[in-house]
Length: 124
Image (cartoon, rainbow, N blue to C red; front, side):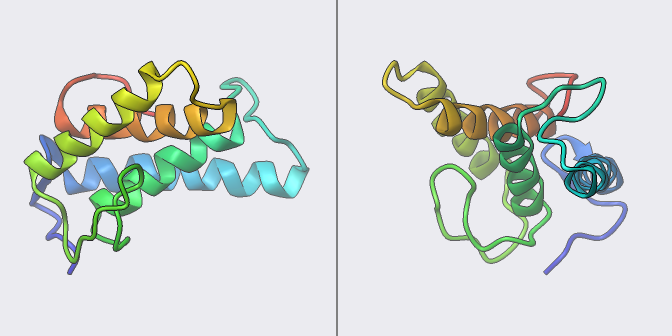
């Protein structure tokens, strides 16, 4: 089930989350076509943008598993579930043995979900 346009995901309007997701995925498509692994002007690694894209998809109810924990989900996650996923990403970001690609993916998911939850004003 997808949310109504006037509904909220976390503290953000669905339209805001959808816009952030579309902006990110549109830039990824353009980068893929050009052969780039980072966006001009933004320099986001592929893993970071993939983590953010997966987080947005999950938050929008389009993915059946949380991007970091893999927790099953059948609908748009509640704020508590979004926050739990942010916390799980934060644990990975603080783990000294977390590899570069995994760390970048977790950072993308963390930053996108932290924005959705209202913990940050910046989104990926």
